Length: 143
Image (tube, rainbow, N blue to C red):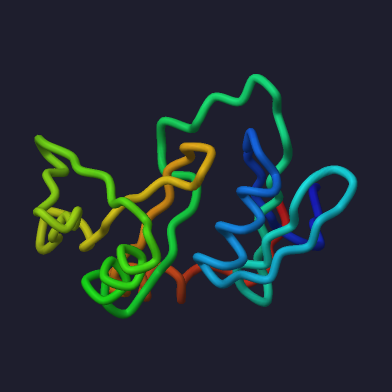
């Protein structure tokens, strides 16, 4: 049986100083530099560890979702900070601001952007479906 004490994610970046500035200044997270990389404290209980990788290849999927009350307001704030929102076509078609508007059968309202290393992040609107799923998850678990 696995008993864990903490949960965190990690992914690579190609430039620690640029990543530190982005996650700390643009996104507003506390960032601690260690000899191995950067610890980004996303919430009180959750951190992301960013490690340098010389042959870094950006993730082709969303590595970090940030739940917000309003995607529209978050996109405005990110854009004002110089962040360029991703544009998509097809099933996840985004509008001119980079927002995919959700709804019944379509998923949540969400917008994607990249960190300086090209990893994909998102702002996703706080929705009843997300909140309900969170309430059902245990705060700690044994596997």
